[in-house]
Amino acid sequence: MPDADKPLLIKRYASRRLYNTETSDYVTLEDIAGFIRDGREVKIVDLKSGDDLTRQYLLQIVAEHESRGESVLPINVLTDLVRSYTTQATSMVPQFLAASFDAFRSSQEKWVENMNQMNPMTKMPGFEAVQAQQEAFLKAMTGNTPGWPSGPAPEGEEKEEDLESIKKQLAELQEKLSKMNK
Image 1 (tube, rainbow, N blue to C red):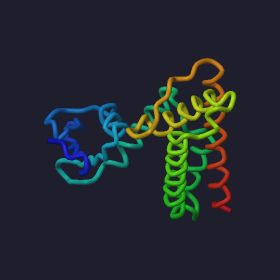
Image 2 (tube, helix red, strand yellow):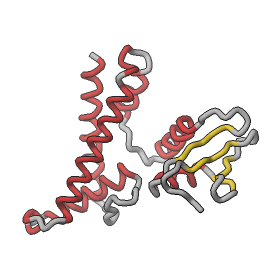
Image 3 (cartoon, rainbow, N blue to C red):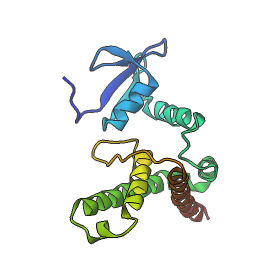
Image 4 (cartoon, rainbow, N blue to C red):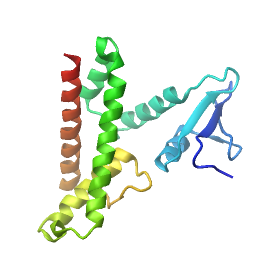
């Protein structure tokens, strides 16, 4: 029986196949991404050596999504991440990114909480369009994690506006990261 409180243990065999120890079957990277979107923590270990491979597989999942055109990270952010590996800021980057995403999640939780309460803003003209854009942004940033709203997928101009909004927010994060590197 799955225990959602414990990380899902995935073992990598010498053949590079990934084995889900809870369901006793082989899984793909996309399956692992699905577990994470569903709110599960995962731990991927090499069967023979016991080495923790979680980080490298999560990076591979991100790289595959980015290469399929599901881009979330702008080039300037990726460039700064690469640059951070060669600067004195290397030790600060993980804490900065973790704090930034924690702050982002916290502000989004507060936003969702406010929207769930009787809020006079909901009666404002155009509010539904703003709410749909925010939900699309949340869906893109959280990968549709349980507990997060998942609104209808935007179409046409709204999709471009959502992309611009995402780019703007990530550019702001990049700017903060650049200031830390100075």
